[in-house]
Amino acid sequence: MSNFYKDNPDIEKTLDAIDLSEVAELCEEGFRFAKEYQFAPVDAADAIDNYKRALDTCGDIVGNRIAPTAEETDKVGNILNEDGSVTYAPGIKLAIELLGRSRLSGCTIPYYLGGLNMPCTILTACNDIVSRADASLMNIFGLQGIAETINAFASEDIKREYVPNLCNGTWTGAMVLTEPDAGSDLQSVKTTARLDENGVWRVNGVKRFITNGCGDVLLVLARTEPEFGDGRGLSCLLVEKCPQVKVRRLEHKLGINGSPTCELVFTDAPAKLIGQRKRGLITYVMALMNGARVGISAQGTGIGEAAYRAARDYAAARKQFGVTIDSFPALRELMCDMSVDLQVSRILAYYSSKCVDLENGLAKKFEALKGSPEAAAVRARMKKYAAFNKMLTPMAKYFASEMSMRVSNGAVAVLGGSGFMKDYPVERYLRDSRITTIYEGTSQLQVVAAIAGVMAGLYREVVADALDGVALSPALEEKRARIEELAAGVDSAVAFVKGHPAGKTYHDLHARELVDAAIGAVAGALMIRFAAKFPEKEASLDYWLATKWPVFHAGLARAKSGYTGSVELFETIAPAVVPE
Image (cartoon, rainbow, N blue to C red; front, side, top):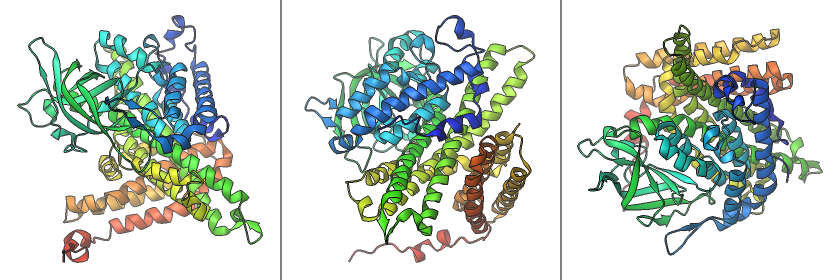
């Protein structure tokens, strides 16, 4: 195998193109930690060098130690033992140990709690690398949001008790939200938590589809206020693995077989309250959303990377009619589609992560500057990126997850009959990719989350931010005009949708076309930024404009068609199946 960071220069180039200098300064709080920790950076250049060293370590571990175990992990999966414990596949167990030993499992956690104090963008790049090797591993490695939630909202005693062992791989964790009757609608959670006579919280209920529910530290969304039947009655509680928590079942899945997906039963399980009562969903789970979305965008990107590489290598070696199949025009176009989709996914995921880092870093800076003359300007920028992230992170998750399916499906097509066989890994990539469009919010829900920003024209501000300070050649200025042309089309379609007499029905019917075109504009701007830094990327930019602009404009034309037959004539067009 090889180092999965060093053998993929696109990762480093993407990070260089989006520029993490300000993120580094905010993350290191003006580089004040250098006085306390020998390994803390002294300036932005030093921080970025640290980031690349961490990615090098991740790439080495994942490429040389973990990737060779992925096929066995997929076949073996996890084992539910008679005592209710779960045995990981050997490759997953090894990965947890190695990544914990490197402290990459605490990538974004502060130094004093045993973490590396790195930005979300670097965790996104690590998740990209990990997912290329084994997407199921990312579901455990990427659960660093558990430690982040404890760090952000728990008491200092709880932080010091739990976070260091999550960083070093001694413990793993799970976010325990979903129930049999509460999937996307988390306000309907029925699991309860009550204070017993000794003042100890006790959790009772059933949770389903819990990634790594066999973990040592469980953050459980439970109803502590029975008088409220909605999100106001929910709190976040920490439950340690104990006899009162049983893994009742492991789900049998289409893909990501190395990631244990558990059904859990809580029977008076002792718990500790995280933060304040009644804020479990409204504050704490919602705070996880940006990180969760960019995590899956990285997972989709990594799966796409693996699938593209397998297809590209196969096409260069496979001969038909006396020539390698990568000489066929139709196959070349398919692989160009796959490659450019992948490049766009990566820069959109990394840029979205950067915006999350800017929001979080500016929020800390604002708190430190409260009452000073500079505070108002810092707060204004923080609010700008907070608004961006409500639209950008669902865009990144939606695009990357759908991309991973397209590219994995394309890889199977390139390999033909061989791609359908388990002799090659592309059928695994296709199976693994499917879940990325479902968990952490389906693609449909990501469109719902992003559409408000599109309707309000916020995507134009993101385009301007992506190109801020970038010197453009005359050729790139012309391509920037193409972005403006598409944006004008989006604005025209938005106006039509807003004025349609069907109101919200028509808005919901055509939200996807509007979001797709707005993503096109944002991604186009990011690719222009990329090409300004690395001229060889201009060919990918040109391909994006030439092949995707007609698709986006066609979608906008559908949005302006006024047609509502799929809603009004639903029973006629798609009649119910009548049993014999």
